Each structure stands twice: as structure tokens, then as C-alpha cells.
Image 1 (cartoon, rainbow, N blue to C red):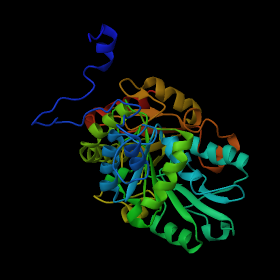
Image 2: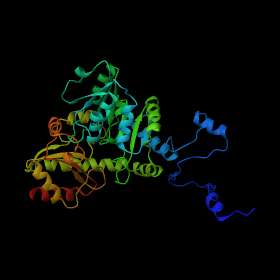
Image 3: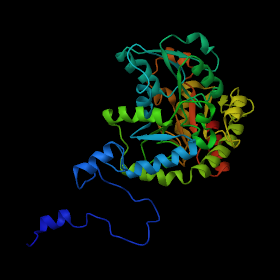
Image 4: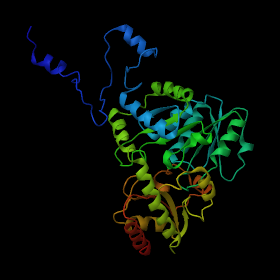
Length: 392
């Protein structure tokens, strides 16, 4: 029987060709669903008796390659990948709490996370207490229904560093889990699971990608915690696309090299900015003058402190607006961690949802500029900041 064009167009070329050689790079598995020869095989995959894939919302070969890399460098047992960093944060939190529970969280967090904790969780009758995890005595905030402590390895945007070993011991003493957002550090600088943290989350959009062309999130933990996260994620559905997982695997190949250069540039830039007459404060844990420095040395490895810093200008809000305009190659970007240096203005971007009172409580001034230090020649970066600062 002769096949018509439509049949040939649909069914020919469905299977990859056999070859004695293998693809040098990971293929892109752009399939939303996978086919079976019989019901028994489908059952065996669903029941975990056979390895395979059913639907990309539940898993994809590209996802598994990404999980394998992240588990190895974070020294976790399992991982889950998501369509955004906020999905990694929200799914991880929701996997641990229910109506009537209580959460302790740092009061200096990424704005989206703070908004989710403050506004969204109240709809589920979940109470959240915000504290300064560096200065406050966290012990007095635990309740009988406290299920979770949430903080960031390096806080956004003040670059504070909490003692993760101490925090994990306190949390576990109260039968409470600890989630840490390790986006600013990556596993190259800090491995929170080795310090006692239960779940590590990432906005993979940032350093894990590093090229400003992916939106994604990742959670790494034990098999038990990740299975709980995977179950709830399958219902909410914030899955990473196969193409984004492929791009992230590509990007992770150079993560160590990039983080070393980001960190080296950031330290030199911070040391220069700390001495500039237009700047009131520089927030960078690598500076010896930073109150976060001793804890950072305790938490971090490889003598690296990351590429993120913030500066507080004497000229306040007016100075922040002027500096953004004066910078030339350094762009104003409401994100971070690309290969090119960029600046952001937290009160109008990441922390836009904060009220003036919340900004004051978190010590985020209207003269605060966050800098994501890129991979350029450091002398060029220093020269551009110096020129721009002198013009405000």
C-alpha cells in the first residue's frame, strides 16, 4: 500500500539512526511525551521497576543529566529542576508545610521570596516570622508548630552571611528543617548540604547558567525530600523545558572557571569602591572590613566570595539614579550573574514590593545599588565606575 505524503511526513524519521559513534554533546530531548509498545511497559515505568519516561512534566532525559551534575557538585542524593528559581523556592517550601504551620525566615531575602512568604502563605493559614538571622537570637522565635527556617547563603542585597552550621544545628534541635537559597554562591563557593542544611535551592537563571539566556530553578537534597518536592511539583507543573535543561548542562561545564573570575574581579572592585569618596558603604563578604567576612571564611571554600556586592551612595536616591545613567557599558539590568557586569536598583527591581517600613527594617536604603561583577578586564571595570561616580 502506497503511503501518502501526510503519512510519510508524520511517521518517517521518528527514530534516531544507529551509530557506532556517540554524540559529543548531550542531545536535546525535545519531546513532551514518550511512546510505549504495550501497557505492561508503561506500568513498569510508573511503578519504578523499569527506567524510562512518560511525560516531560514528570521527567525528561535532559532533566536527568542536569540533576546528575548538580547532585555531584552539591554532594546531594537527588535533585529536581524547575522553570524558574521561584518555582524551586515555592515548591520546596510547600513540600514541608501545611495549614497551621509556622516558618522563621530572614528579613533580608530576594523580594519575590519575601512576597511569597508574607502574602501568599497567609492564604494557606501559614504564619511567617521575619527576623534578622545574623543579629537576632533565633532560639526565641521557635514555636511548637515551627516546621521550617528559610534564609540565603549570601543575602540579597546586603550580602550578609549566616553561620549555616549553627543554623542547621538549632533548626534540627527544634525538629525543624532548614532551606537555604545558594544562588549567589553556587556549590563552587559553598556546599550547604555539607553544613547540615536540608534543602538547597537555586535560581539557575543566575550563575548556574551565567549567560543570561535561561530561566530555571533547581533544588538539591536527600532522596526523601526531593521525592516530596517532585510529587507536589508534578501537580503544580512548573517544569523546566528540555531546551533550557540542555543549555544549563552546557553552562555548568564552565561554572568553576566563571565563579573564580567573578570572585576575583569582585574583590578587586570592592576594594577600590570601598575607598571612593562618593560611597558610604560597600557590602561584600570578601572585604576584611565586612562583618560577614569571618562567617564567610567559615562557610565558603576555595577562598572565593562570589561576584555580588552592593554599594550605598552618600547621594542617596538621586545618586543612584545618576550613577545608573552615567554608566556606559555596564547596563542597568533587573537580574544578575551574566558574563557582563551589570547594576540593579533593589528598591525598584528585586525589592519593589517592599514598603518603606520593610525597606527600613531590612536596612535597604534608596541609595543602594547592587553590582553583579562580570568577567571583563578588571582595570576597565574600575575605570568605568570611577568615571561614573566622579560625575554624580
